[in-house]
Length: 261
Length: 304
Ligand SMILES: Cc1cc2nc3c(=O)[nH]c(=O)nc-3n(C[C@H](O)[C@H](O)[C@H](O)COP(=O)(O)OP(=O)(O)OC[C@H]3O[C@@H](n4cnc5c(N)ncnc54)[C@H](O)[C@@H]3O)c2cc1C
Ligand SMILES: Cc1cc2nc3c(=O)[nH]c(=O)nc-3n(C[C@H](O)[C@H](O)[C@H](O)COP(=O)(O)O)c2cc1C
Ligand code: FES
Image (cartoon, rainbow over all chains, first blue to last red; front, side, top):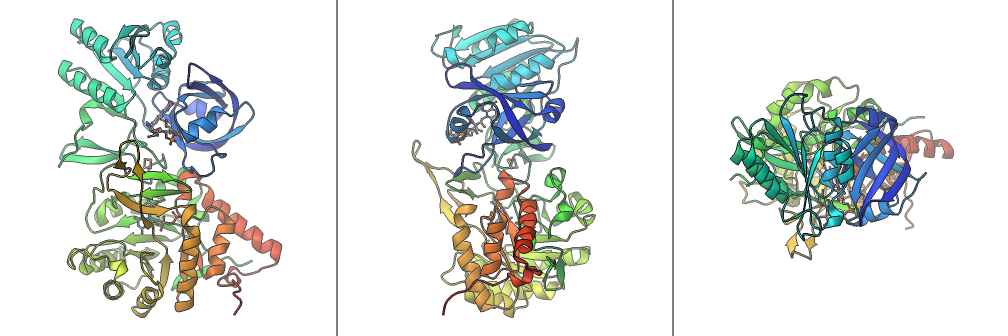
């Protein structure tokens, strides 16, 4: 974990409201692992104080990139920044994905919207290729399809409005694939909470292991404020664990989807 | 140049500390800054047993501030000692432990436990929690309850005692005086302000707990006034806090009458804040030829 003022190398529109932000951050790029995130402060954003968390999308040489969607105050300001401007970063943060092993389980990646960012880094670093299930509401929510293919992954696209790929939810082709064969496969997912919950249930049903990158609101990002907690099963019941520190990646079998009484 | 100040028998190398609940147990931020530069480390509130805390969402960002309802999640006295004390006790700067309970007896018991531990810099009594025995009335908003809890803790320990007052009162002076009369060595002012935020799209409160405590830069002017009023009412030192994010903010509190200050919410967005405040304070004094930080304390000039 480091804190650095970094320079923007580029910040370009990908599709629609999605942007690719490349920053010069050599030490963080060196340390970054798939599923980890950076906590980014847009200093110009005066009355909104907090940092914003973004998954690490690429770490190459001296640069570290995130793939973000402009959804509100912080990301709007960020989208208007350009090369040479500075940002403050804390990272890499959190506990990431377990890298698949060569010759081990076949990884099936399930990604929704900006969840494709974290999945891309996992796909790139994994010695074992597999299938990427990429889902979104519309065609513009499908990111990095070509890049996944270039890495040698089989990409299955779904959109809710049917504007691209198969019409429906990302879980449909996933279930079909697991019906064909579930043995020797492992799920990795990043995306909106309802998607993660569905993937968690599917993993349970098909008895396949799964790792989920949980999307919780964060404040400090480093484990001090206890904002980002989720209930997690333990040997003697349950406890709150921090998404920013024990997570964001949790084993699906540990995550509790209903609040225990 | 002298930056050191005293809170009862506790000497701080400089008057800048961190606020309870915004710095975890120290260890988390130790990878980003040298904790031995601080005046003191103040840890998250601890009661006798472990506490799960509130459901989520627990915090919400508002204009120049934050509303939180964490619900005092924590490991309890034993969990804290086992997990965090080895790290904290090895620091060169004092650790102040923020404690709470739901009965007077619990406060006193927690105070006794930390007294027996040895090496604790001081105890800060968080009185912004309800007294279960007294039907849920807050310790911090009832002068008699407040006096009772300070008295019981004073009997239980010789450690420096800091009473952290609630801002949720008509006038803070009687509370400050009650804490002083019962033997508190210092006051901490202020805790968070009751607040609420609504999601207009869903018509639901933004916090699972519905209401929470407002902190950050937006509360600073209110906190300054509270410190100023309390400083006129008591002789014991005051630790001022509420929205500090720069040396200028800290000096504002010193001039209002605070002997020391604490950085809270700002740690979340800029972990270097506390070091920047210390450096900026030194620079301010150098530029103006002020050789002792204590000369700033209460130095605001109010025309009669
Ligand atoms: C571990 C982690 C990794 C993330 N990775 C990425 C990523 O790679 N790319 C990306 O675009 N976004 C990512 N996010 C979400 C991102 O942090 C939020 O979109 C961002 O904080 C919004 O900031 P804002 O100021 O623009 O929005 P605000 O003005 O603060 O809010 C606008 C809207 O965004 C929603 N929002 C805020 N925070 C979150 C959140 N954590 N999750 C979902 N919705 C949120 C708010 O509820 C609101 O509806 C990640 C979040 C987490 C916790
Ligand atoms: C997330 C959070 C948790 C807090 N937890 C505690 C606590 O456990 N005990 C306590 O006495 N004060 C607690 N506080 C209050 C702070 O110590 C401080 O009094 C308050 O935040 C005002 O300072 P600030 O505006 O600089 O944050 C907490 C504040 C925040 C924001
Ligand atoms: S965001 Fe503060 S503890 Fe996780």
